[in-house]
Amino acid sequence: MSILKKSKLVAIEAKRPVRLDGMLGDPVWKDAQAYPLSLSLPRLKQGATVQERGTVKAVWSRQHLYIGVDFQDSDVVAEGASDGLHHYSLGDTAEVFLWPEEYTWYWELYATPAGRQTSFFFPGGGRLGLPSHFCQNFRFKVKTHVEGVLNDWRIPDKGWSAELAVPVKALTALGEAWGPGSRWRILVSRYNYSRCLTRKELTMYPALPVDDFHARDHYAQLIFGSHKS
Image (cartoon, rainbow, N blue to C red; front, side):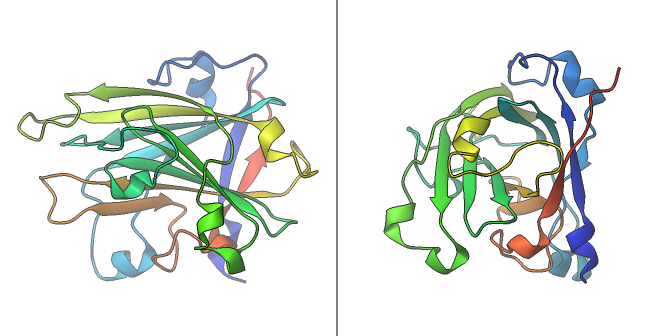
């Protein structure tokens, strides 16, 4: 068994709705573990290092899965003007892949520093790429904060952060279980475009053994942790 299959991402339980401000300002985030994003294992073996760091945290409730990301970014750019687009080709993007392990289907969610979102649903890996699945599947809440000036490469930026509130009702519409005892896998990845980089930077948690964000067997186990008092 690959050691990557043992990667975990622990989501702490929220006892009340999380207040979203784009800056992870709700007190519950302080108790959630921050996981650093990494380059893929092939890139690391080549001696590459992360140029602009990022972290991800997770919080869960019976109603929502909350994902919080915090990214260093010297040039924040998001040229996608509406929801439902392939934002990874239009600028800086945070991606969340969610897979209920007992089923073949999974979701790919995007959030951009401009507050845009996308949710794609794939019935299975063997259907990946078909046009019918690249349409907005459901809507979720996104709040973002940019420390700098969006879409102006002349002005140095410091970074951006985002919070996603994904409705459990949408994730369990086909009968999937949710909460402790259920089996979910997760990958959080990032597309980072910047004039300060020699090429766009792709980072992720967990680090994958291939440069393919759809390599689901290597996603982290989503652990439904209890609230810390």
